[in-house]
Amino acid sequence: MLSDDINVINIANNWKKNGKKVALATVIQTWGSAPRAVGSKLVIDQDGNFEGSVSGGCVEGSVINEAMELFDGGRSKVLEFGVSNEMAWEVGLACGGTIKVYISELN
Amino acid sequence: MQKSNLDKIIENQKLRKSVICLTNIDTDEETILLKGESSKIEDLDQEIAQCVRYDSSKLVNVNGNNYFIDVYNPPLKLIIIGAVHIAQYLVDFAQNLSFDCKLIDPREGFANKERFPNTEIYNNWPDEVMESMGIDNRTAIVTLTHDPKIDDVALDFVLKKDCFYIGSLGSKKTHAARIERMSAKFSNEDIQKIHGPIGIDIGARSPSEIALSIISEIILSLRK
Image (cartoon, rainbow over all chains, first blue to last red; front, side, top):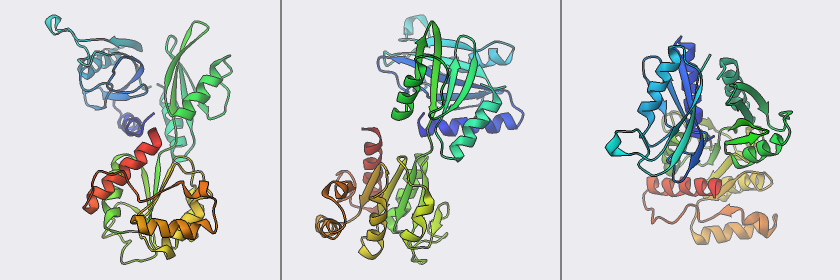
């Protein structure tokens, strides 16, 4: 846990206290040159506000969409992102790494 | 994550205690452990101890279960002795890096709320207040007055402590004189813990650039 991610935890706490639905996404595994270390966090609220990061901005959009599904009654899950393929319009990491992200709702 | 577990993490951060959130990512079951507390899962405690030691989180597979060990070590702390011009920039850099900053200078003209609006200020001699600051292996100490009357008092105190970084401002000549004064009281091994002249060499000239070189050296000591 790096210090930047402590701020994310505190923001998650504040949003939850203010009555928002809050999801927390954490990098749990990386291969190759991943932009953020294991333990890095992204917090998302029901309105799509977010703080922190799980990559260099490459996959956050997709993680935010997954958070919205969680708020609609989905369950925690592990997301995997690999190398992007621009031709296929896939979400991915330009750096060539692969990451696994665990996302769960704060409740 | 359960809100009650998030509360426990934040509470222990405030108490400066290492806390671990162990999640079985297949079942979403969470356990909060304090440093040294057993998970009661075979083969897992050693992995947890390693994660705490190296300030890193890790996914492990034990008996077919996937556990995510998420480590929350206490916040980093920076104690600055000397509320000089460099300190104003150093506090800014350090606070952006989420260090808790404490500033010690008995001279109220230097250490005051006008010059340091968002910093914990102690208008004391270092030996009067440092004992109460809980210096530990997540703490860095920087002396900036280059006045032996103030800096040496702080160094005498911290050289006996388990902090991860000690740095003292001053030229090579100033530092050589410091080493000579210290060698009457401390072993060579202890004295070598002091980074002096302080900071990594980036050719810094202005107070803000010197502050950047100091904070860079602190991060280098922490991570390498």
